[in-house]
Amino acid sequence: MTEVLPLREPNPHVSSISAPKHILKTLNEKRYLIQNLVLKDLKTRYSQTIIGYGWIFLEPLLLSAVYYVLFSMIANRPEENYALQVIIGVIIWGHFGKSLQATIGCLTGGGNMIKQIYFPREVLAFTPVITQLIISIISLAAVVPVMIYLKVMPNVTIWMLPISLLLTTMTALGVGLIFAPINAISKDITHLFRFLIRAGFFVSPVMWTYEMMRERASGYWVDLIMLNPMVVPLTFARHGLDGTPLSIELKYILYSAGFALSTLIIGVVVFKKWEAKVIKFL
Image (cartoon, rainbow, N blue to C red):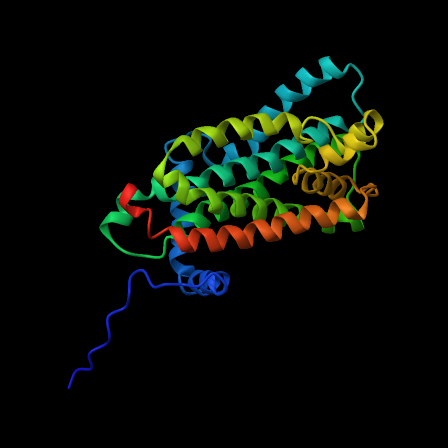
């Protein structure tokens, strides 16, 4: 006699407390689906191009070259390792901006698929971020020739680089998950964050560094600038690769880490609570 399995509720209720645990369980169960989607995304991005995956290295190099020339003219006397600092800033900020935009648009971007078949929508949110993380890690190889030219060698501070990528990924995911359900109702959110990411490029230490800021700002202004949660990750990445000691106060590091963790937890709770309810707007 054939055993009849009970039907599975497509949109089970998940309490706010258990939402993080539920999503972790789902991501583990669907890891093969996520892996296939990531591979598909990577192939799609660089298909029908002559250079192919070479764009992973070429894009940050070209962007960094343009920004370096432009800001060197403005700053007039950039630091000795400014070229290295620029390319690291471009790669880390690029990871943050693209991951954030992808997470915010995960429901609207997968609207047709969501309407046709049920599967955990959090897969759509995490997959593009994982793809972007892989691209960013590979892109960091583009700093090697710059480091060789400048005779810069990483040392024990290299541990700060993975911490930088972790904090950046958590922050982008957390903020994106919070606003993804709202974006399904109104795509004004997409346009708003496109502007914020462009503006954030200049108010974050992409073309300038924490050390430059401390030379020019003090007191209240330093505390105000450090409210930007991306200051610490970007500075971590730079010091992790150039091997120089870190001078950021512990309170700012704890703030950035706390912001990333709390935002991710809030994002997971908000996304899990509302993602099923906003599908009708897609």
